[in-house]
Image 1 (cartoon, helix red, strand yellow):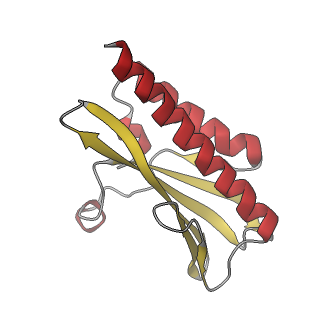
Image 2: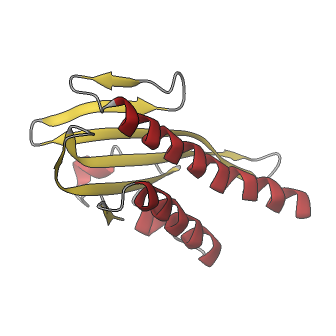
Length: 148
C-alpha cells in the first residue's frame, strides 16, 4: 500500500519518514515517491495492505544500480495474540526504461536476481538500508509491546 496511505498516526508517519531518510542517507541523489501505485482498479488489486510501498528515483540511470527507479515494499505481519506489528521482509525491485531489471528479497537469501543486477558495493549498501529499516520498525515495536 502506498506509504502516504499507511501514515495513519504521527508515530507511524515518523517511522516512514525515517525509513526514507535511511535510503537518502546512503543514496543522497534519490527522489522519493510516497505514492508509487496508481489508483486504477487493476493496480489496486495487487496492492498488499500489510506493506509500506515507497518509490525512489535516481536523477538518471544509475550505473551502480543499473536502473532508474527502485520500488521498495516493507512487508509486515500483524500478530493478533501479542497485538503487535513487525517487519517480516523487504522486497526491492530495480526498474529501467526496459522494465524490471532485478529484485532483492530479504525473506529468503538476501540475493539479487535478474537480468542486470547492481554492482557489489551498491548492492551491499542497499542490504544495509534493509537491515536499518528492520531495526527501525522491529526494535521500537518490541519496546512498545513490552511497555504496555
